[in-house]
Length: 195
Ligand code: 5GP
Image 1 (cartoon, protein in one colour):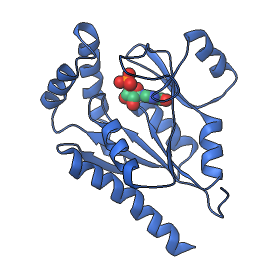
Image 2 (cartoon, protein in one colour; image 1 turned 30 degrees about the vertical axis):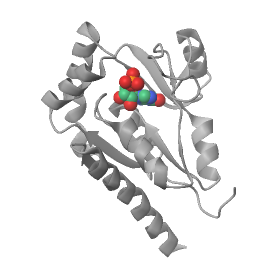
Image 3 (cartoon, rainbow, N blue to C red; image 1 turned 90 degrees about the horizontal axis):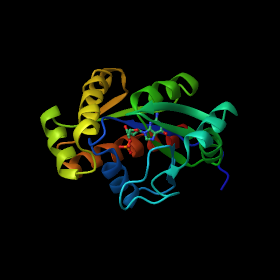
């Protein structure tokens, strides 16, 4: 598909367990012509995660090679593992007029803002750190030291929320996903009017 305009890049960040993925999936059920960028990571897959769907699960060696070749739009080491967004994927999608969503940590989000200042940064916040801890424990994917690291990083990430274009508090997935949908569709109406 080739449109006369470029797609918009929406960057979703927020602590692990805040519910970015859930909100994005809900929005994708009803919003068309939007794509999710599948990140590369060196973290091992969790139960149920699929290579090429949730992430591209690659070795640290492969990741470092891609990094050396300057193939990442942004990347970061999060909770001890590398995560990165492939530049080609994003550029190709946006050039064909399709909007795109990245789900990345705060370090990555500000790298994207630096390189593509027209992108829209959305912070998804849990209602509280106590609630975040409860959700992470309930999810059961992390325990002990990993859980402790994620909670400590969550505190640091929350401090950056004020620098985002939008903050969505995910206290109710239905309401919060509608908010995200409004941000995307609101931008699209604006684009239509300008055409
Ligand atoms: P998880 O291991 O829970 O899937 O992800 C850990 C953190 O890494 C989350 O905050 C997630 O948004 C972030 N993340 C996932 N993909 C990327 C990426 O491509 N780049 C960056 N910078 N962070 C990412």
